[in-house]
Picture 1 (cartoon, helix red, strand yellow):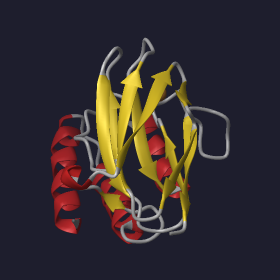
Picture 2 (cartoon, rainbow, N blue to C red):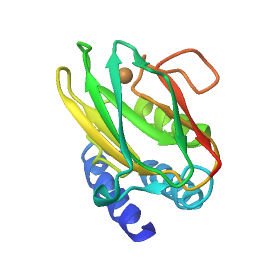
Picture 3 (cartoon, rainbow, N blue to C red):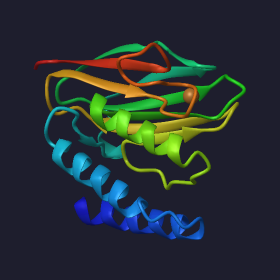
Length: 169
Ligand SMILES: [Cu+2]
């Protein structure tokens, strides 16, 4: 997984070179380490589409998720069906609040960045539906948000975000 994340980071670095931003690799490596650390800890891991326990539908509007609170059980693999009913592009990123905040800061710095989809996130264009499969391995609270600039200011502020409560087995 770390290898894959590094490869994605290097791809991102390729995009960045065009706009000559020397700080990118540092930023990118910082977020790679965060994701690797969290894997297997509180947020869970990318889900196997062949092992889906059930589907949860979430509608994205400008700018919130409906519902914004989801309950799952520990051990479940959930297929999130994200329907974008808004007029703007939206994302869903699953992670710890620190990771989501970091992702948001990066998007704020590089708003036009075309980043490849990572396993914990999905970008959905207006009128489209996207899928994100995630395996919830540990009981607790997992956060999600749309970190696009203007949609979200940080996990401690109101905005396009929600929580997934993972109930213990
Ligand atoms: Cu959004």
